[in-house]
Amino acid sequence: MKRVLLGLSEEEAALPTRCVPWDVAALAAHTAGALHRVLVMLDADTPEGAASVSAAGYYAPDVRFSPEVNAERVGSALEAAARGADAGEPGRVLGASWAELAVRVAAEPVDRVVVTRHGDPMLLTDFLVTRVVELGVHGLDLADALGRDPWLTDEALAVVVRLLFGGCDGGVVERVLPGALSDRAGGVAAVRAVTGRSGSDAGRDALEAAGVRFPALG
Image (tube, rainbow, N blue to C red):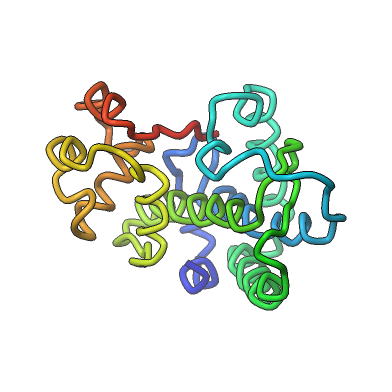
C-alpha cells in the first residue's frame, strides 16, 4: 500500500471511492491515520486494569460507530487531505508510522494494554489486529477506486478472515462463500461480502446463524 500511495498522481487522488464523501486522498489520509493512531496510544501511560474489549468486540455497533463519531471520522480525514502537501503525503505518513511501529511494538510486553480514543482498554495485540483490518479493508476500497488488483497480502488476509470467521461453522461458510476459508480469491471475495463490499446481502442470514461476525464499520 505504501508504494501505491507514494506514487499517487493528483488526478488519482481526486478519484471518488465507495466511502462517500471521501475521495482517494481523504481515504488514504484516513487509512494512514489509522496506523499512526497506534503511536499515539503507545505514547500514553499504560492503563491500570485488564483489557475488556477484544479485536472482534471493537467492531460492535455501539458508540464507536455512532453518527457523531462517524461524522468526526469523516471530517478529520477530509481536513487531513486538504492540509496535505501533495498526493503522496499519506504514503509518507504510512511509511514513517510503520517504520517507527516496527521498533516500538517489538519492545512492548505481550500483555501491554492500550486505551482507544473511545476509552476501550484493549491488548495491544488485539488493537493491532484492528489495524490490519482497517488497512486491509480500506486497501480494497483504494484498489477498487484506482482500478487496480487488490494488494492485500496473504498474511493480512489471514488475519482478517480469522477475525470474521474464526469459530464459525466452516461448512456453512464455504457453502455460502465458496473458497472463503481455503483460497486467496475466495477469501478476498468473502471479506468483501461480509464488510459490505460485494453489492449483495445474499446468504447473510445463514452466515449469521453460522456465527459469522458482520463488523460495524464507519
